Length: 181
Image (cartoon, rainbow, N blue to C red; front, top):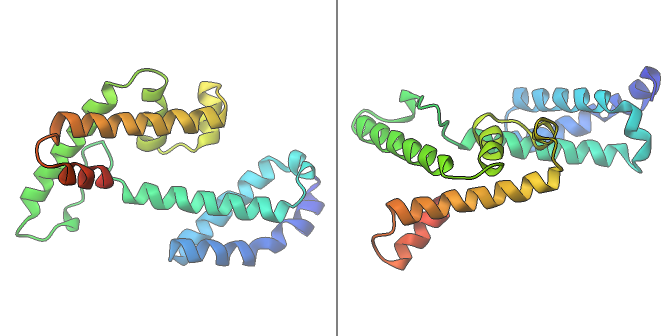
């Protein structure tokens, strides 16, 4: 696809992509950043765009996936130990901070018990924030294999945490912990 064809066929999708991203992100600046990233990805794959039946559908799917990835990333607690103090009120600040640091240490320990390539995939995806395509390139693996490995790794980490730290108590409590993890 030439630059002219890209301008003519892809750039007019801006309003639709921006509105779609904004509904997910609930923040116009974040939505603009997402759309910008989508345009970069589409530009980088411009030679392959003719293979798709609908470039618009591709762009919308890419936007949706990137929005969901960003939302998930924002909901996770970084495993680098840094915790924002403003996320706590003064009364339970220290107690919550200690709880979160303990949970982070436990999660790191659980991840360390994983075997390769699950350990590396989880590190790249959940800690470093790489997307599936980037991980596929780094590890020279199929994206679907990465998704399956990541899912299994997360389950192993969840099961390890439940068994090692939360196994006491009733089955109802264990199920509650499973839902949180």
